[in-house]
Length: 290
Ligand code: GLU
Image 1: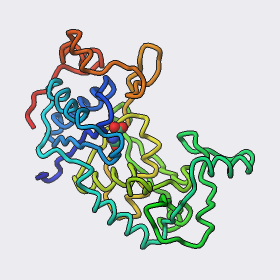
Image 2: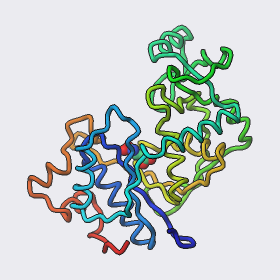
Image 3: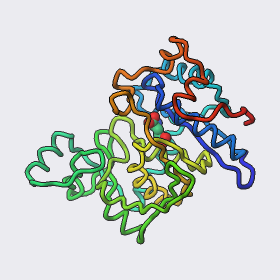
């Protein structure tokens, strides 16, 4: 239960690899902020990608976080228990007329946009979707199709500019203009899982009453889409804090896909939770008063 004005934080790892220092930073920062604010701290397992998720990674998440000294509310939240909620949100968007089915593969999009010459790209560097399927007659959504957001319809429906409150690295907050149009017609339901990160995260944050989203800078641009979806679905807007990423010695972002050292390897080499906090420039442990 959330008391009046009580803040709710969450750490939301995907169980598709071992946690590294970057995850530790995010988890500890959320936890410390929750402690300082007398708020709640939730753990959410983002496991909708049923192909990449693995039970041993989930077990390792609990073990690593407990080792770091974190205490989280029970039960653990789990995205795979909310597919119905994501489907309901997608049905709502469909009723607003802002979704369409798309059967294009990545190769189709690459081919079509190459032919268009100097075609714009999204924040991830992928070519904006050229709208091939949007122009076709509306197809009944089927498992064989992705579903995309019709960005110009969605923006027109929302009307004016949307913003979000960003705390960034420091305490001073700024209002950021969401300007989601630069993403083009993003996929909101993947053909393989029937949902997407964007839908799941927005629905979950609202379901779980999250007031403060604290996550890495790599998700800053995605917030443009999240704010648009919150507006379309009539969901509250949390405050955001996109923290700096922890870099490896070569100045590269740590990623589970690269051979960055998992927390458990540092532990095996004798590092203590206090050492990890020190490595990350975080204050000594907060008392676990949650
Ligand atoms: N599950 C995402 C990740 O592990 C984080 C999503 C979020 O914090 O919004 O990168």
